[in-house]
Image (tube, rainbow, N blue to C red; front, side, top):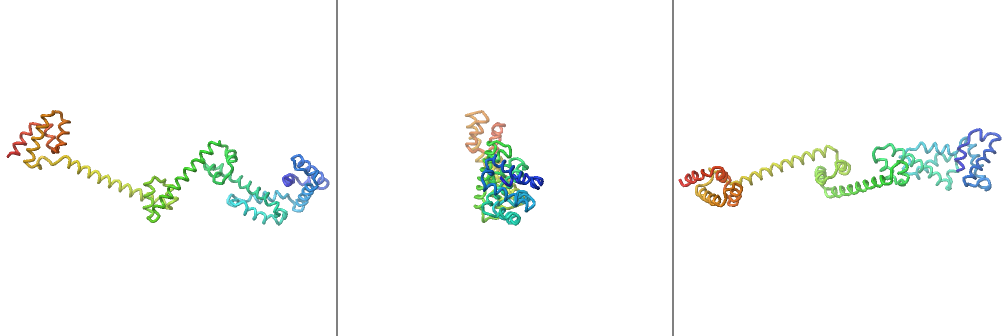
Length: 308
């Protein structure tokens, strides 16, 4: 608080006869904030010593401290405690009192505030909800996040819920990868695709590039086509089996039996659908059933031919 007031002074305030008046003015202003200086000799001495230090250095302590902190990047401030140690090592030569244990917590607060300011600035420049995610990841207080990014508490909770879902999906994909840890990259990727993992997660967690994914997907498409071809062939074979032999392949004795069965069925019903159902149930060849429902008179001709 004392140093902040000293930072406001200009060269005129500390020159000649103005110095004592400036000290009294600052003491009064600090009294008004509740930091009793005028009536406490210890605090008044701190103020005078701080001004003496400023006059020796030729500039306020806070100016050096702010300049040093402003030079740090977010990466530099990732660990405020180690950054504070480095900072004190650099400017402690000019300001020895900063190295004292009682000053260190205050300097750490300055460093943490600088880190927060940089994080908020970065977050504001990120698209969509990425800024909110950044501040959540950095464990910034929720009220600070909503105020800094001008979002509602509900919006913040929605982002947190998304993050929770994404973490659950990461855990699921990790288990899928564990199940294929001894497999090739291609087999791992195939297993992940079959279990609906996103390409983004596959690339990140399986540590493969897009080319591997594309090759596996192409191979899977070919597998699907081959299975479809085999299924169609099998369906055609079963259909052919169900349809029975062509007319010319039916032995004469079987032809006579089939015709007799058809006539019995046609005595029971003259509706094509019913005739076909009953013929199918009796395993009568489809080629012969087609003639029965379309050209029933031709049955006599086929019967005579079969009798020789």
